[in-house]
Amino acid sequence: MSTITTKDGTEIYYKDWGEGPVVTFSHGWPLSADAWDGQMLFLAQKGFRVVAHDRRGHGRSSQAFSETDFTEDLKKFDVPTLVMHGEDDQIVPVKDAAKKSARLIKGAKEIYYPGASHGLTATLQDQVNADLLAFLKS
Image 1 (cartoon, one colour):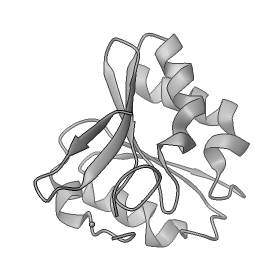
Image 2 (tube, one colour):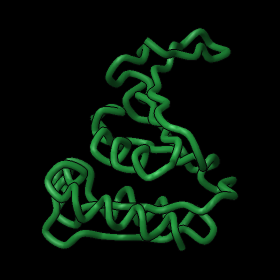
Image 3 (cartoon, one colour):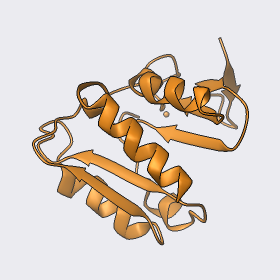
Image 4 (spheres, helix red, strand yellow):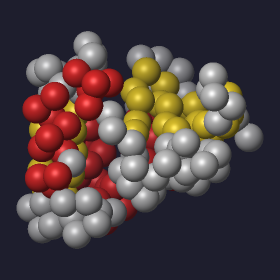
């Protein structure tokens, strides 16, 4: 199992597949890196290196809290960023997560899927994959 250990001793699990330009995936609460498997496999086959991690307290990573405030981190992003979210997500409402995050990330591109739920990477896998590839080629 691939892990890194943070300064405070937390073990963070990650997946690292393929070769080429790097695409990093961050899952929503309460999922794990596995939520991105369909996208990671698709992009790895298209010549990208894909990396996803299990957030603290999720999946195979050690327990630092299930809720984390990424506000200051998001303000520092300096790479092209795509924020994707289902507009009918009942677990993590789009206005409370994706839209706030996108406002903090300079130049973030946003895609919101009407009627889509929290598991849109599985329920709309082909559309999400196509949107990811279009973003990466832009």
